[in-house]
Structures are given as C-alpha cells and as structure tokens.
Length: 440
Ligand SMILES: [Zn+2]
Image (tube, rainbow, N blue to C red; front, top):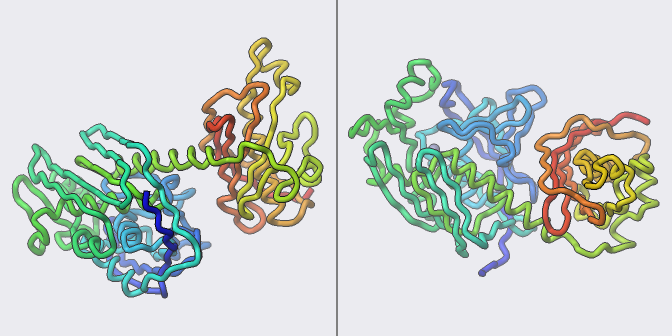
C-alpha cells in the first residue's frame, strides 16, 4: 500500500468569518486560529465563561438530528459538519475554531464560505507526520432507514455515494476521490437540502430561526425551492458527500479507503466514525510490546512505589514498561492465583474483579500525572469513571498491559485519562477516568 510520508498541516494565520447561526438566528463571528502538531481540531466558545474548548472527536458526539452536535459537560457546539468537512478536505489537521455562539455561521448552507476562510488563512505544513487510518478489511454500518455505509481498502480517500429521497425521488449517484482541488470545485458549493415535511414542524415551533431559502434548498413533493437555481444537477448527492467528509473528520485521522454510501445520514456517518475509532484502538493495542523490557524508559517496582502510596494488596502496577510521550504510558500487572481477591471472587472459578482493573488503570494514570507535575506531595483522588466496559474475563496467569493516556489536565487540580487493559492482544477493559488532586 502506498504510504508516502505526509506532514500535518495547520492554518498560516488567523482568519475570521461572520454570519447567522441557523438555529438561534443570532449573529456569530468565527475565527480560525493556527494550532500545534497533534492538536487536532478544537472548537472554542469565546462567549462562555472560561472559554471552554471541545475536541472535534467522535467521543464528544451528542446528537445527530439533522445536524451534528458535539459537546463536553454542559457545553455544546451545533452544526459542526460543514466547517469540519472544509477543514478536513482542504488538508487542515490542527486548528482552533473560535466562536462567540454555539454554532458556526450557516452561510449559504454549503461549505463554500469555510473553504474561502481556509484559503484566506492559508494552509502550512508542520514538522510531524500525518496520522492515517488505513482500511485493511471491509467494514460496514447500517441504519434503520435503509442507510448503508461500506468502507473498503483503497490507497486514496474515495467516496461513492447514492442519495435517494422519499419514494426514490431525486436518486443521484457520484463517485470521486477527495482532494482539496476536487472538494473546492465539486463539493464545497453544494448546499443543504431539506424536505418540506421535515422542516415545517420546526419552523412552526420557531426552532430554526436563522433558516431561510438563502441557506437551504427546500424540496416539496417534486418541486425544488431555493433562492438561486441548483448549482449542480446532482447537488443533493454532492451535499451528502460533504456531510460524510465532515462527520468522518471526527475520527481524528485521515482515512485511506473507499466509502461506498447508500442513503447516508449523520447517524450512520457517526456509527462508521465510531467503528473506525474502535478498530484503531484495537490495532494500537495489538502494537503493544509483548516482552517486558527493564531498565531505561520505564519504572521498576521500587520506583513505582516511590510515586504511588498504594501497597499490598492494593498496589495494582508491577512496573511501567514505557513512556511513549509525557502523556502516555504502559504499565504491567501480572495476575497470579495468589491475589487475595481470588479467594472470594469466586471460589473454584477465579476471575479478576473488573473494579480491580479500573483501579490498575487509575494507578497507571496517576503515575503519569505525578511525572507531569513532578511532585508526590499530593495525592490523586478518583472522581468519576465514564464509558467503563469489561469485555473479557481476566484469569490467574494473565499479564495485563495497562495503557493510560492523559487527555486533559485543567490547571493542576483536575485531569482526565483514557485507559484500557490488554491481555493476549485483546482489550479486556476500558474506561475514561477523572481525578482531582489534594495535598497529602
Ligand atoms: Zn449538511
């Protein structure tokens, strides 16, 4: 498979754009800022206290009704798919999208204004390799309403899409490779289209205050209503491709593969993004070292105990085998039949309790935190665990590789970590943990 090294890119300078938010009808100003390597795309709510940011990641997906909404905590950003589509297709890997509202300006319902914005800001290479997801085997997702997305191996990013309206009216097909030049010319100008029967109730409830024939094409029966004539005979399928690119940007990696889509929508696009991220996590787990190195690059049991206050029977890390970066490491826990919890869990059928795996993840994550803050005078307290999944039983004799990655640390008081445990090349458990720090 062709894999020419490609560099990550960000925007060359700050550029801004003003317009109307679709749902509230408010005026909104959006500013595109450069961002460092491996930053990804983040949205920043300049209008809120503390100016919170939200990662454009599938884990932060909140709703997919008509548009794609992401959020963290109580903070939301709506209708992110068109700007994400433009950023991704025009080759921007890292940027901050700062806004003074909960939604980007809708423009004319296409991605045209965002492409113009990216071109105004410029796209510049950075000194790190781009991250790709190479499709190795066919993957597919299906929706309840006949939507189907198939992802096939390809050395380019291609999309072949079939769109069909009610009673198969407006059935259109287009197949293309996604490149910046083709996106700008063939996809970006394609506008949002809606069916009259879908938007009528919303207009009646005043839920799309900024909506008008200036930013959407309305289909009523066989009639097509819009301010200006159709820009392409097959404008609808082109907009579907625009949305697929935007929703799949939530994967956070560039896809090398061919997407074959039939009647796609935001929900199935999001399902495919989730499957890709799951597959990527599985692959990363497989890439974990099988042998346990000692010495440089990790921490032995003594060093672990200098950092962690935990002792038998609660020390759940034997050794840290490697620090990949400052925010990522892998610890090891060898599970023996002599573990005290096996006496009661369960007699004659020893299975390691899931909570002990979560404890192991928490301990490995706190080693990262202490390394980062360079102090052991404080102790991390576990506040919450989200997305906890126990996938396979852990048995006596297993060696658990505990992966931890700090995803957020706010000041020196709060931190979040994504963790998973691997045994024999399979993920046995995973969780997202939140900590707070208190002085000992
Ligand atoms: Zn759209």
